[in-house]
Image (cartoon, rainbow, N blue to C red; front, top):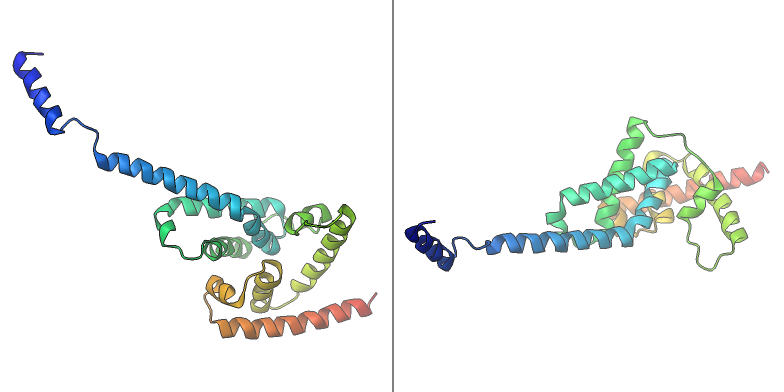
Length: 203
């Protein structure tokens, strides 16, 4: 390097021409913060999303695939995370749309009522192994009745009873009014009562 080139390089460094741009550092910090936020979402909501997916698809492999696809979509839209007011409802809406699309395309694996698999979607706190198995059997029986409901009533009941969403949250997931949710839930519960009564009369 000539003396003039050395002087020019020294001036460039002094002027900041050869420094790493602050924007690049900020961008890397932002991406790390987003990655940490997404990892926290996975830890906090993966179980809930699996319950949503399984309640519709009734197949463990398909349910796991749907949850993974939901988080892939979150990664694609990571820049919108800060704008989301209710992350739980937002994530459930994403996975709900995924499972409905898969159900419509009818490319899912065969449904299963395997009791050992159903225990994954049930709360286990305070339950013995025998109680959990009994609860899973009952859960499978109820899901069989739910499957007989009309689609609109079935959707709100699944989100309410099995995924424990409020009417406001269900309205946000389905994109309908809260009053529509309440009326569908009313019809669904009445139909379920009739179906369960019929089932009991056959035993």
